Length: 243
Image (cartoon, rainbow, N blue to C red):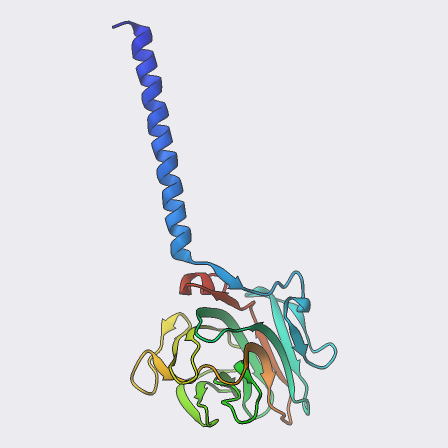
């Protein structure tokens, strides 16, 4: 066999191995991307409040600030005597399943609770009003489900303190009486007061449902909810990657 034949075979083998390595690399990357899931919605701090469908807040109360731990984040400031400082987005579809992930810290200057997250429904009357909500005081975080009779069911509580960051993740299936909730707090899957890791009940009501973050409940003291950009995604990994 001539040296030139050996050379041609060697080159062909290198090309074949290189092609195989590239192909495997693409397959691995594709598989990883599929496992990571797809982002369905998230606001942009670079774009600002217009990333949300609406902002329900006094002028200057909501915007982007820099945080030493999290970088560019959202700040909802509810002054004493104001009912709310909340954002609204996106609208939801009954029957859908999705994951949500974000981090938040609160600074509440009185003893009253504030809703810091709501899955809200319209109309507010004769419905669950807010089928899922997370509310906070200066020392406690709580997750509640509200049924179609607007009766609250406390699913989970934990201690906290002002200006302490926590991460939240929810898996939600939207249903009027057969919806489900799964919940992760600071990266750990939580067990509900029912003894189960999945709650089945009301996660949808009325004719329009959407998500809200911020601070809600008329109170005597100021309250601030600072939070990272929420991510709605098809997997837990995708929803929590940035929180």
